[in-house]
Length: 229
Image (tube, rainbow, N blue to C red; front, top):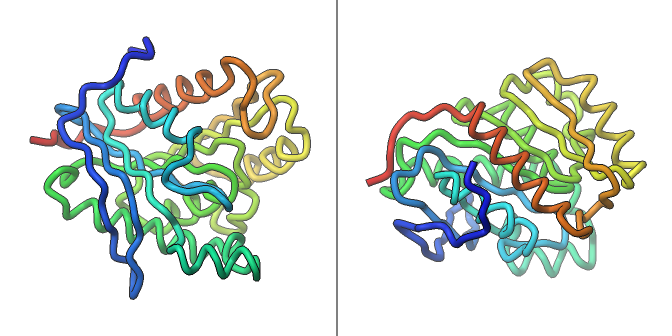
C-alpha cells in the first residue's frame, strides 16, 4: 500500500449537503482519480466532519484509491440541543438512519455512483455503522476505531459484512466492550489491539497504524464494482 504521507491526487473535492428526512447534513466528499470504492465516516459524539483524526484516516484511504465522505450526523440545531439534553448521541437507531441516508445519497451522485460502500465508525459512530450495515445491502465492509460496537445490540447478530474492530491497548474498558461485541459477530471479523494506544490514538504513530489497518481491510474486503469518471 502507498502510505508515504504524500497528498492524494483528487479528481473531485467539494462541500456537499445531504438530505436526511426534513434535515440537511453538511459533508465533505473527496474522490481520487479512478476511485474503486467509497468509505463513509460516522463520527462519535461531540465530533463532526472536521474531525482531525478521521481526516487523517481519510487521507490514507484516498491514497489507496478510495473516495471518502465525512459528514455531520447532526444538524447544528441538533448539536446544540444534544449538548443540553444528551439524548441524540446514544440514539444509535437515529444515527444509523442518518448514515443510511448518506449512503443512499452517495449512490445517486455522479462522483460516486457505482462505487461499493464501506463504513468507518468511531466511538458511538461505530455502533451506528454496524446497525446500518446490518440493514443496508449497499454496505460491504466496516471498520471501527476506538468504537462502541456493543451499543449496536442485537444488530451485531445480523451483520454479514467483514468487520474490523481496532482498539487501543491502553483503553482497557473499551477493549472489554469490543471483545463482548466481537463474540456476537457472525461475519468475517478481526479484533486488532494497537499496543500502548489510548482511546483517541494520540500517541506517536498510533493513528498511522489505524489508517494502515483500515486501508488494508477495505483493500481486501471492499469489492471493486466500477470507476468514477
